[in-house]
Amino acid sequence: MTDLSNLLVIPRLRVQNANTISSNLTWGFPAMSAFVGIMQALERKAIAAGINVLFDGIGVVCHHHEAQVSRGGFVRTFNLTRNPVDKTGKTSAIVEEGRIHLDISLAFGIRGADLSGSKEDKQQVAESLNQILQTMRIAGGVIVPPMPGTRAPSPYISKIPEDSAEQYKDFLSLRRRLMPGFALVLRDDLLQSHFQSMAAQDPEVTQLDAWLDLSRLNMECEEDKGEVEWQIRMQPGWLVPIPVGYSKLSELYKPGVVANARDATTPFRFVESLYSIGQWISPHRLKHPSELLWYVENDLDQGMYRLQNVNEQQNHHEVQEI
View 1 (cartoon, rainbow, N blue to C red):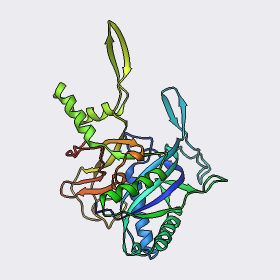
View 2 (tube, helix red, strand yellow; view 1 turned 60 degrees about the vertical axis):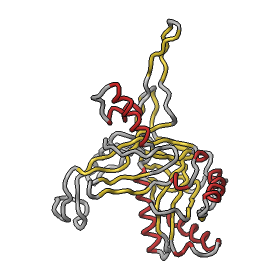
View 3 (cartoon, rainbow, N blue to C red; view 1 turned 180 degrees about the horizontal axis):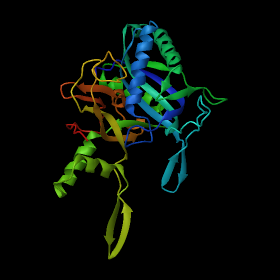
View 4 (cartoon, rainbow, N blue to C red; view 1 turned 45 degrees about the horizontal axis):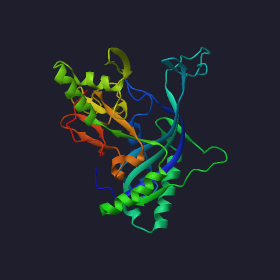
């Protein structure tokens, strides 16, 4: 990701019926790839509207979520809809889909010629980008107006100072405006350290074993003065399994070679999902606005198409494929 120069914040978006199934193995919140997709689509629409800006990354702060599921003990079932009858008059099949209502704030790293003007000019750019965003879908969900009697805060663009001390001072104010809520950050380091600790006890353990062990609630037995007590193992934070991209399964085929591909003008490759561990943290734990942002980091030679996020919570480790 390029050096961050400006941050566009669009606060308190209400999204209904977003896709909560983030991959074949995970659910509960839209995948970050869906938000990166909305960022890229917003950039194209902005350029088409004559707004000269480029987007470098996107961050998400969730203030409230309501998964559309029925609750019954430990088992939850998605609330599904019955579709209208088809053209023959027969009942249409139920399509399983997971939906969630969200109250989120989005932060974009942006740059461009239109951000070199006055404060009023930047505010006009922020308002214009917000108006474009309101016409789009986020992870398949529809952006709806604020609750009656309330008013959503105005979007704004904040210039990131070059001095580190000034950066931190300005970010203090921005963090307060994003609270209460939780931001999703990447924790590749926890996955790697947990794998190493498990491998020290069992050399045959795999990365998948470590990922599953961090993703679930584990009961552990503790003995105190002859008495045995079972307790849930405490995790170092609110950890969640997340998809972070794709890895190649085949060579890169030329456009039109693979039958029934969606786009006959773009090269095609079969891929599988990549998974890692994410952590929901309060924005006040972030030290720099770049820690909030996710961006694309592809390795075309290795066939890796994945998202990256660098924050103070994690150390730099080599990413392992799961």
